[in-house]
Amino acid sequence: MEKGKKIKVLVVGDDWVTTKDLIAATKRVLEGYDYEIDSYDEVMDKPMSREKKEDFGDDSVTEYCGHPQDLIDRIAGVHLLVVHTSPVTKQVIEAGKDLIAIGCCRSDAVSVNIKAATDKGIYFFNAPGRSVEPVSDLTITFALALCRNIVRADRYVKEGRWDQDINRDVPNWEEYVTFRGLTLQDKKFGVVGLGKIGRRVAEKAAGLGMDVQVYDPFLDKKILKEYGTVRSLEELFEVSDFISIHIPPVESNKGIISRELFNKMKPSAYFINVARGEIIDEEALIDALSNKKIAGAALDVYYTEPLPLKSKLIKLDNVILTPHLAGQRKDVSEGSAAILEGQMKPFFQENSLATCFNSAKIVKTTNK
Image (cartoon, rainbow, N blue to C red; front, side, top):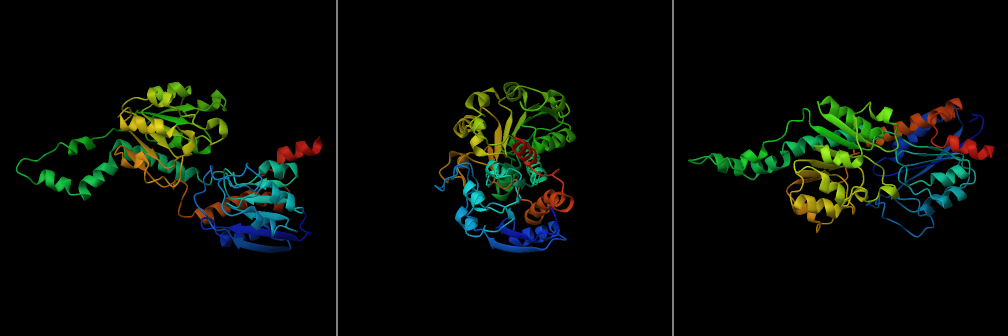
């Protein structure tokens, strides 16, 4: 980018990544430029479900907040669009006739039609890895909480049963002994999907002395072997003491964690899902938990979000449930904006495409 040209920018933040933090990051990206920034706040009309679809002519965009018309009404003359969850549909991109670049501070930017941007020669920047540490931390936390029965033990104390069981003429240890848990040393930890998060989970599990098992059909076996023992998906479910899911919710992965796979798990094994709910057969998991076919599970994501109160999962005592909070680090706003800043800066300050998500495809399209 040449600094002699004035840049018109539209910045749209929300409750999770604020407009204020995105503007501050954008200003640092455009240091030395003459620029004008317009902005507004998106209303986070939760849940941001991948099943949420509105009839605005672009089914490729999911997990969004707001409506594309809000962007279309403001996109005229804009060169740089910076968003978090706003739906950047093909209609928005077609209306943005002066767009040069789009920045979205999400790793998996499913709220942006990247193909439409690429077809128009618009450079796209995302925020890769913004959730790697918090999601991998929660995964390991789930493993510990499950195998040491922490949630049940907490209720045992708070509901007064510990006091009642011990402060009697003959102490009753019957429930107390059910809290005895596994040690992690040498236990097999299965990781399904070796992207940035899966790799970090594998590293942390190995750091705890666990025997990591890995499955990812899209990576070279040489790379996979750096993180653990390479298994087929079926083998991984058969041998692992813990199984954690870290694959994207593309159409081909919907329901891939099937009843057949759950049936292969050890009765003593634990299942963890911090990826997306639609990846697993939720009813099959409920059956496995209800009938004690597996020891337990921890879930941060569900097929329907928020999880309905009528869900059978809520009544089970061998599953830990959290409200899709894995990526919710304390500095999610500043941190996400800072990662996106780092991705966009080389383009605007060094004329470099090294951190541009779709630059290779744009070059190929241009050379056709």
